[in-house]
Length: 180
Image 1 (cartoon, helix red, strand yellow):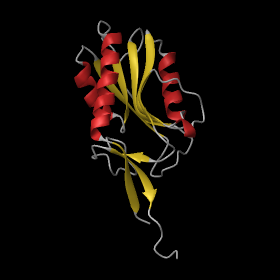
Image 2 (cartoon, rainbow, N blue to C red):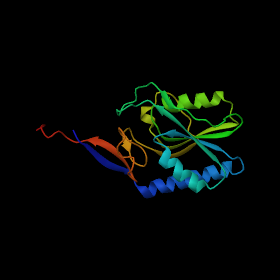
Image 3 (spheres, rainbow, N blue to C red):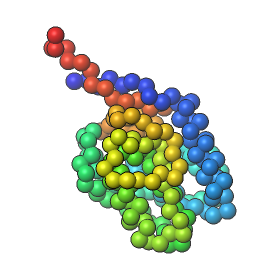
Image 4 (cartoon, helix red, strand yellow):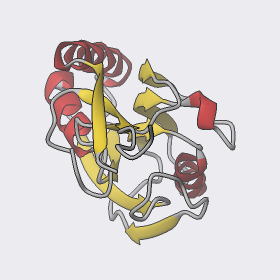
């Protein structure tokens, strides 16, 4: 069945949320040279917009984790598919995530980073889907809470499709043409 996209968040509302988050981060980290750790691939668009608006000295690194593969359901198993290289100890680290879903990926990374003894460790997420949560997650900076739908756009994908969309949509399967 082909997928049907329904708009959930407009480009303007996303821009507004990113600006709000960037201003909060600028206020809290203006003299701390934070390290923003993006979770690839989904966070790259959000993180790029975020750091341009923050407009303070900072460093950037990325880690690549996966729990989805090519499906729309989390496998429940987090895999590291690309490591970060920046020193974490005594740094102010902000993990930047596109969406918190089950919480498994985020909890895994936060635990890994916590072991490295950062000066502080915070989480900034564009979207939170609490209906899918399997483990508790504390989000320090949040853009939106979203319903229990599979979302795409603004860097977020479904099997590598739809990252280029400026708005955020949810995928709704189209009704079968054979069902009468």
